[in-house]
Length: 307
Length: 181
Image 1 (tube, rainbow over the protein chains, first blue to last red):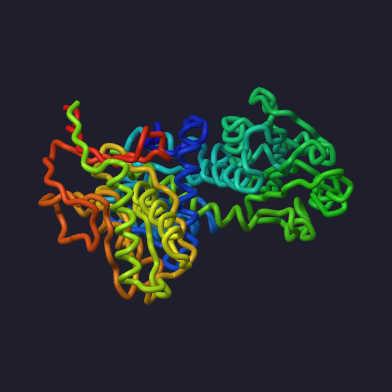
Image 2: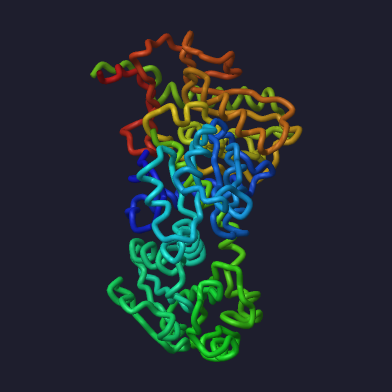
């Protein structure tokens, strides 16, 4: 069988289309496993995985941990808040100390872009990037594309609009890479202050009116406004953002077609997405969460299988 | 490449018919029995059995395809990981008699993995194993078939290939072939 072209999952940028297809096909099998009465397989029973989270996370951490446990791996968790990082330990020292306890894989989230790339050059374990600052969040992009494939049959040829805070979003960047590699057309939409200056260089369309973006697309991936990353005001108020960029039922009713709504969570209800859309039949937000476990199982399984 | 024919199309067809009659003899109306074909090649054998069974006797059979890739004991020990196939079992095997169907029984490791995978669908009352070819004296595990088409003596340097017309071969046949060095 084929194998991944890389020892680490640092970002979608390093993957090729065959890698992504292989991950999807493996995730199909794991999705079936997750629907069995006993949702566990013994594949990774001789592997220990450390979840090293230097930044807060609820669902990604939970999803990774569940994926690891479903694969029978031993799991250790590390949260920087309660660790020696606060005492001035360096990243390499922290991780090497964890690896000295015979850990085979590291799942890491860090607030600095490139942190997992840096680490991959210094340690032997396989590394999975669970989000590095505003850079990449590869497993989120994979599960988003996998969910589109599941809902619409294929990703190739589909039009996907990513709406919201593109500037601070690692989900946006990974999604753009992933969707383009799979042959989809991508548009980004948001207020000018939240669109990176050179975003067009990635080959995406740029739109500032949310209605036009919705009219254009088959799938709208609505992103969270990341207030924690905004040191300055990028827009006057949440209320104003919601008025101009919030996706609601009224807006969708004006379209002459049905589109699929996605959101990587957590949702700021009433800001970027209204409840009447988030809970509607157009939304596949909960399917995304379910697929997240299958995708992460596939990634861990394929990386562990490399010699 | 040296090739030796083990079963030709007619013989294979007779074996499949015999399997069906043995199953009917032992499992009556199949009320409490299910058949599981081991992916990928056991599923093809099972399909043939199901097809023949419908011609012989109109019984309602419960059957599915079981993939044991994630339960194998050679993960991380072989050069490339095996690709998983679809598991399609839309029933529970709790308290059922299960017949595992595969094409060739060799080391017994696939069957061990399959029994492990099977348990995710419940605790079976009894498990039987049906294989087209039993390669004698090659087992790594204490596993033996309840039903077999033909027992053969083989060397480590040989492999047994089962060819089906439905897979694009000129006709159904089972061969013993020398592995290429």
